[in-house]
Amino acid sequence: MDYTPQYIALIQQFSSIQFQVNGTENGKSYSESFGYTTTTLSSGIYNVSASLTSNGTSISYSFVVDSNNDSVISATTSGYTFYGTEAKSFFDGSMSLYGLQEYFNGEIGVFTDSAYFTDQGTSTQTFGTVSFPVTTWVANSPNEVVDYCGVSATITDYSLSVGTPPGTTLLFITYLHFAGMEGANSEDITFQLTSMSVRS
Image (spheres, rainbow, N blue to C red):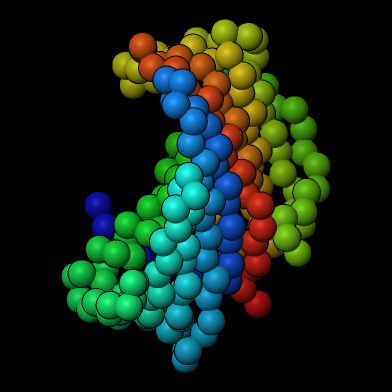
């Protein structure tokens, strides 16, 4: 599946986004932050400055994207500029973490299924300069066992918050904390939106 149009759609809606991810997997800790900022070069064409920091190591990219035809014109990193399929590959790779938003948006019914999770209500929350209503779900009980598409996971701690930022139609994940076991693998992850700006 070509995810480039979905990533460009995010850029069209949000001029900047910043996330923080912390967690452990099978006892190994990791910490990541990622985000982007944009400037408009001309009608439908944006310069995107993206960065990813993982366990203290940072990498930065600069992209020129054209939302008129969902294309990546160029990608620049470490002093080198790429075009065509190479530019698209760099863009898709650097934006892949934002694919979590697309993935969970498409599968939100699984993560809010009343058989496993309880709606805790809605409150207005602020992310950077943007405020909007956010609804939170938690697991129905400790050690909740969730079965989906042949995969079974035991959840020991869970909280999911989602909302729709003003000026958009995207159901956005603002916070996700998951701790539990999937087979022999243990995981404890916190995925959090820290700031954002809706394009005016």
